[in-house]
Length: 390
Ligand SMILES: [Zn+2]
Image (cartoon, rainbow, N blue to C red; front, side, top):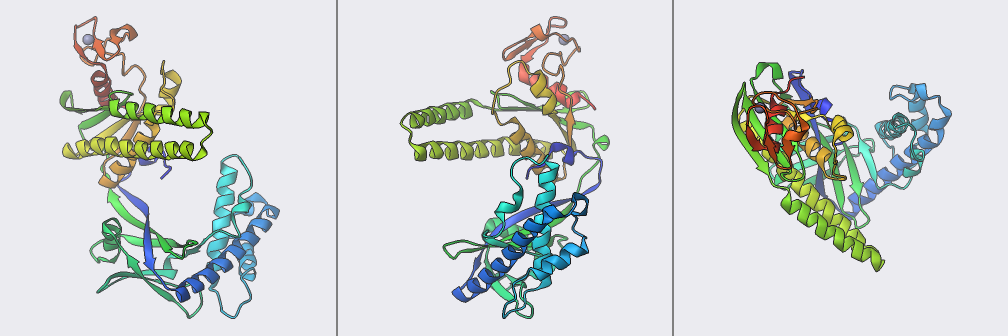
């Protein structure tokens, strides 16, 4: 979900949301053997294409290039089974896309060719994986060998169910896109299925309510709902517990580093990531819930690129960007527009009278020297963020 908040900036009425869900499949040794051969064929094509792609000029790296397509088809194994040419097409596309994004990143790091050949997956075009509902739940028909489709029952938990229902229910306009089959060493098989559905997003100009979000260390999140000039709600999400946990894990990590305990170092890292994930989920959900309660509303987030340059004491590796991304992601699903605003002076300007002076903010307290207004500094900032327009 590495998307920037600008992608969610409203101005469009209908947006498509695409999510990838992972489903465990019921399989057998025989089915796994068929999948294994499909994966080998797919990886063989991908590996071949990764070898030859650098010999094409970069402007020919596109998915429509028919010469490449024919080259990919010829790289399919000459077996006793007939692999579908769409399998070669998907392998070729996979390579072209990863080379293209490698180039767009400024050709950082190694050429992506090393990842092909022995990976454990194959990709399926949308019409080579059909999801069907049946009396036992859901199944998927995969086709990567001509005239020999393989069926799997999908183990669907609550999470997968809500998405599969959207695909198979006729009233729901969601559609299933391309997919991947991942075969793990222990014989478990997973389907990574993309699902796309449209969401109505209203234009921010049509609404008078804005939710301003100020991110900090503690409170972690301060959100203010402002309707025209009236502040109708304020919510604070404490950051104390997070800070505490973070310090504990950091201590454990440095102790582990002293005794060179690699496993403990890794465990501390994992634990920290999991907890950060949890905290950022909770904080972002609260903001989006708040916006939904006051819908129609637009969410205003600080433009962090600016913030990082100007903050006097930026908190390193504090998950600001992660919280913002999650707010944008969840808001998008809920059809709530998000706008990035320039946060300059939002923390040092009185939201009552407009007086600006950095000295009026002292830690948690904001006190206006002009009109005497006194309030929690983050609440003042969040209200200013809500009332700032681009
Ligand atoms: Zn004032």
